Length: 310
Image (cartoon, rainbow, N blue to C red; front, top):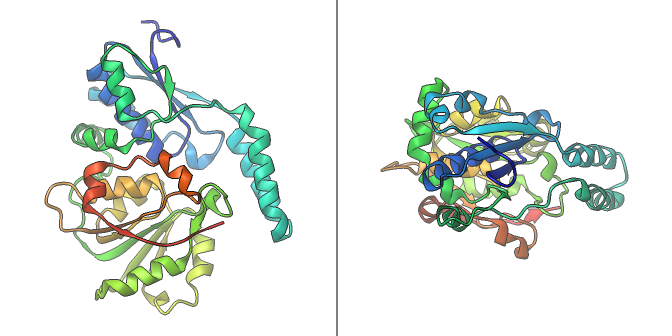
């Protein structure tokens, strides 16, 4: 079957695990909504933290029965910007933001420019008006496909983060830092935001597990905290971390797709888990138009207010 740009819906997946799961959810949705073939284009940008993490899911009987195809692409912008950022950290602080903005401007031309591909776009595919390429960041699609995804995860024999959630009597925090640090688009949350939330819980939980992509940064941030003896810093395989953070009865997320996936898992059915997510997802308010949360999950979770730092 011809899967060219002119006869297939191509979904570009340029991120890590959260984006990859979103891409698979889009493909599952489209496999029942359109007769057009769908191709997932995974682009790691050469970064280890964005390597294909769901290949086992793509090889399950359910996925293969839907004739879902995928391939790995490479666009160098992520690598180049990451290298520029590492170089920038060697410079005086007042020059770092300048280097970051310069790298973004210089390398943007080397990456495909794609609009958000939302649920309404996918519904247009079912009406015979296919979107040819797009970025899968509408979590309404993921939320709708959770039951099928649970089946696929079971078939793959992987740790199932969607089942038996919220049973451990501890607190899990997902603290996304990484390339968001000093990033004028995303920004990062400071430890003070989580510390304030923990104080407001009035909970007797003894263990606070912080899952992060930047363990050294987190260690420095919490070393003088009055909660330091309770804190365990986790930074392992991202799939395993997602599974572990969804075991906790209390979950505090950050502005990350992984936090949204954890929240969706914890808020399914009649779960008694307590979930807190930030109300702000971008430094600039005008960028919030790119935030498409899972509607049912977003309605159920509690939101906290905190400042994003650049």
